[in-house]
Length: 470
Ligand code: SAJ
Image (cartoon, rainbow, N blue to C red; front, side, top):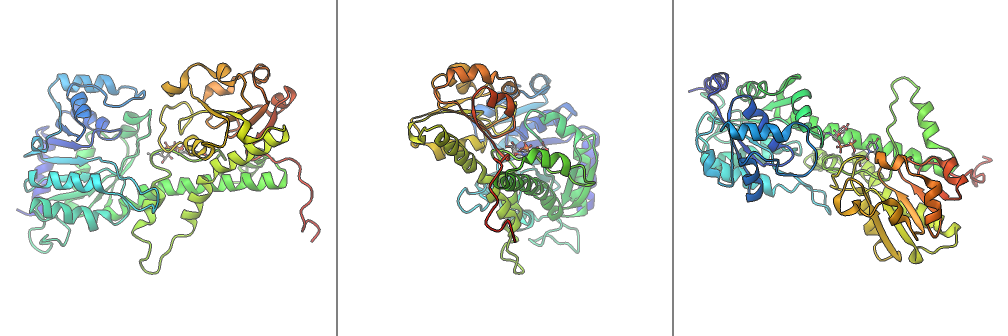
């Protein structure tokens, strides 16, 4: 049977709603994906090594924290309808028509190389359960080149089947491969998982046209936006590139903030006027860049290319360095403001406002606040953290946490922080030092109330520099 015929057979089973789908990895990506495909009428089996996650999804419950509109009722309904099951046992995938792999693909914090332990494990366990004609789609974000150099060989070895469009035994000239393999990276965001899965366009990168066609038919069941057929490498580059692009854009905004501080300008006014220039969209300077994708994907983007054809990345690592340096810069602003009020850092009680990586979110992954807290660890008299969205930091409230403090540092632009009464808080602190890392504070109001304010990106009018009279 040719690969094209296998693809056609799978598409027919999908159209008839008879196809069985497996989803490996029941996290922020796999869980809503499983729910949506079950809701499209397919029988879906979720797999996760974590028995609690598997049990939750099998019972129709959301296996993670956070508000995800529509997800809980959808999971409950699909589990009740008998279309959604979950297990820790890969044998539950025997005979499936298609499998989506949505496991974590972190990078090593030291060498920034991809760590594919979870991916390799999933492929090794999945392979023996696959039959000829099955489609495997990897949604996890991958270093460009991974599909051809790691996923295809690993799957071929584990399944004993050849991959259509891939040299490992795939008879590309004759009937083609027995397995169809594609990469379809996700564009989910915490708080908008279902909305993004339905509403955002996706690159569908097959290792062969037959694989792309099968994957297009699969995703057409749940995606209302454009599905762009392409090759696997392009799909890998699109996903890692779109996030590296954002990281570089943020780094530019942060470097502009540092320039403005050095020269005594206001980066926010500069940004407002700069963005009036056609085609300029300077992003927001801030106290750092966190989350599960922006800090990671730039490293994935350059991982396999580095060292090939003499390529060595310069801008992308530099942008990562600028963004990862912002929590340190906040620490510098803090120490400077304390010094201005005669308080040494080591004698200071410091309150950090915001623990999550993003405003009005409870997601703490790679949060800049954690980086700042690590830098301040042991260097202050006391370090306090407040965050209305993170349970362990919610109580006893900003006022109580500010009482007796020597510095308040705004790290996250939570809406709740935009309404703080800085006059009242001034009466609670011991030393009125305030560092605004996210342009939340009304500077004039704060200064009128007596705060020693340092606003990220807003410099004090500086003395002319040594070369000011070139
Ligand atoms: N940040 C800045 N300045 C900015 C924008 C963000 O400092 O101008 C910081 C945030 O505070 C946060 C980090 O960067 O710490 C990441 O923020 P983000 O707005 O990029 O949010 P993420 O990490 O959830 O990124 C997601 C990504 N979406 C997917 O991967 C599907 C990203 O591609 C989107 O562009 C982004 O959401 C978005 O636009 O909201």
